[in-house]
Length: 552
Image (cartoon, rainbow, N blue to C red; front, side):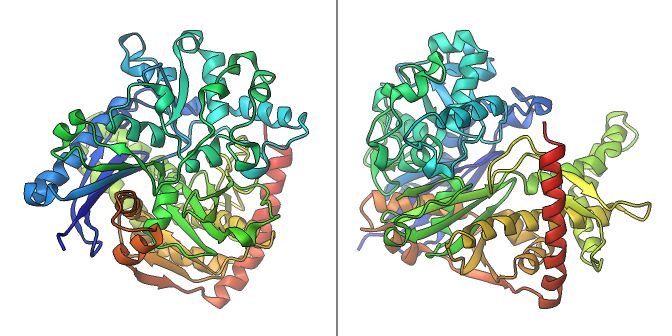
């Protein structure tokens, strides 16, 4: 049997990475990472106003660069046997396109307009639009929000569209449709020419865009037009049919095949969100909570469809048939800031260092080395601190709250600070807070009769920070398995590529054949868990106070 290979592409917040994988062994033969240059330069973003936009050229350049690098690493003897390619992206990260499916920011007149670019998942400029959708939904006999936890978020598809339309008349005039990043990339690779031909994945449509089998597709046009006339007609440009990620979007166009050094026979799979494909790459099992931990977290749990009949889980990011594994219900939750919270604290401490670098007092390379070591040194010192019931306490809502019960208006906080509170103690409080936020998600599932048998941790933080992972295990009181692969999202995309290309009949078979297994398990310390149980009560109380009295 001739060996076959697939490529998985993972579009993250800061960079895109591609892996070329053997379908028989799951071995990663090549990998490449590309940092988005415009994003790295801080272009098109306004942190003060929670505006985070990304130019499609960052994605296109990164897509070509990373795949081409992988192909060059293995050579044509292997590249000619690549049979499939699939992508995952952050989400909800949609963009305005014209009738040809071209993002408006690729047109000259919109090339520097942030509203014509991809609206990144963590963009919270549409808070008021999300609130309007939630209030509007209560007027309808049909509860169109019931499969997204009952609360629509400013991080999602329709809220972002409405905000852009309200803010930018020029974009509103030029826009034909609104498309998720994970749906647009396969369309691009297949050489699509008409926006109406874009295949929407059930993952993006079900979790962020209100598509549901029960509704026969998306809510009717009247639901959106009566919310705001600016939305009139957008529903009718969306298809009723959606696709699971084990299906094919098409094959590589001649143009992209030439760019990438691949064949036009390469099957391009339907796209999905990073956390959903990452859960597959991390070999998720029913009722194990898969946590992809990076700048934020995305938490995925799958359950057999028969077990979910009659169950609607409130306050999560959706429950969708087939959004992770076809034949199972995918349940999504997450935290709006995790690694971002640590990065904020690091940047806060490093601010004086940046000043020294700017004024030439200290060599920039020295400053960068000091900055890079900050979190590891903080972790080392924080791990030596024995927490007490009255130790410093933090609330992790530095970028709002995603789950449970999305609320992007809430803010983070520290309490219990004294003159003895130093940087390691505050950092420890912040780490505990992110672990408490993780426990809130577990509690939301178990409190609504969805068992959680254990946790699977994926991503950079689980592999690089034993301190963070041990605190999380102690807080939640469950073992946490860390997956061996450093690129679980890209590997998951590769598994779906192999399935879409026909190498496997089911993605579960690809998981079994290509999975890399686990290399570490964190077990909770019973004594620490008892202490954290008391501190968790305090965390909940402080969070409730903030939400009731300090949210505006």
